Structures are given as structure tokens and as C-alpha cells.
Length: 234
Image 1 (spheres, rainbow, N blue to C red):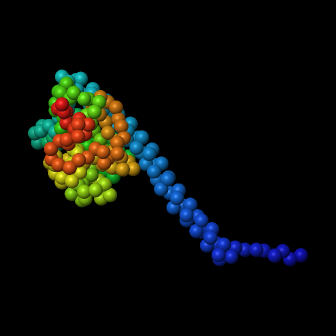
Image 2: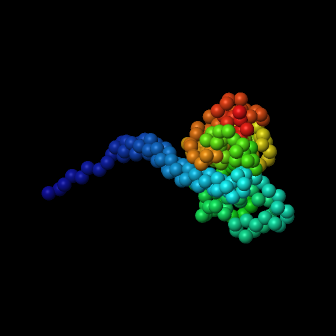
């Protein structure tokens, strides 16, 4: 007996392909955001440990926060990979208090800290809070110290033009190219347009990047935003 076989027609095949394409277009962004959420959680863990290391440093050094940069003289600064240089930066001071240099690497950042002088792996320190007494800030739970950084403002003034750059300091100015000098960048909208932030009291939060930034070289006028950046905020 002959069995008649029915194959797919071209129209049916195209319909199936179209359905698969639609499902892929819907699901791929969801998967990407879920993957970024996992990286965001790993980044938060890194920042939590770095914030604790800052507190440990301050207890060992007369309750002073580590300096943003310290000139040790040419060849006198020795980095974790054995290389030498002139400066210790804030994150070098954290090395004795952490178990792995991988803590300096945000999983979503394109740069990786390899144990030398520069650059850190996506984190920047609030340029205003280093090298001061721990007792200076009146609002330690509101003062940001370390966060996702590297938004190169010279390549664009909006989050949509975000470009990672390996800076080690960070400030609030969305538009200024060099508000904090040539080593400073704005907070990075690295985690679904949000920034992970470690505060002086040790806790870590994820904040929408747009809520952290302002325009201008002076401290932000908004009281809450100023307390995030200015350790001497009243």
C-alpha cells in the first residue's frame, strides 16, 4: 500500500521561521538582562568586600581613609604583580586586606586589573573622600566611596553614548569632560542603566545612574545628592 507523505509547504516553513524569530526577539533581551543581573550581584559582592577593606585600613591608620594617590618616588611603589612604579593609588592600599585582586574587577567591565599600576577593572573611588579622617563625614551611610566608574564623558554627554574608560576616580558631573581632573570619570550605567555603589558605612546599593549625576563643577545643590559626594556636606 502506498503511503502518501505530507511535507511542509514553503508557506508553513516561513510561518514557523517567523514564529521562532519573534520568540527569539522577545526572549533574548530577557536572557541578557537576567545575565546582567547575575553580574550585578557579583559586582555588589566585590564592592561590599572593598568597602570593608577601607574600614579595616582606616582602623590600622589612625582612622584615616586611604589617599587617592601617594607619591612614593620613582621605582619605590611595588604592585601585586611585582612591577614597580611611582604612585600608590587608593586600590593598592586595599591589597593587604583582600584575598584576591579579582575583587577589583566588575564582571561587566571590559577592563581587568592584572596586578600592576593601572587600570582598575571598572571601579572608581569618589575623588573627594580619600585621605581624610574617618570622623569627617557626618553621613557615612550616605557617602559613596567606591562604585562602577569609567563613563568617558568626552565621548558623549548621555547614557546612550556611554563608553567605558579605565579611570580610577569618579565624580558626579554628567557633562564636564574633566571636572575631577584627567583621572576622573562619571558613574558608569553598567548594570541595565544602573550603578553599584559602596558607601562608607559598608553597605552597597544599586542606584539608577541618572539619579547620581548633575551638571557643573561645584557640588550638587540637592542635599541628598551632595551627601553622596561631599564628605563635608552639612
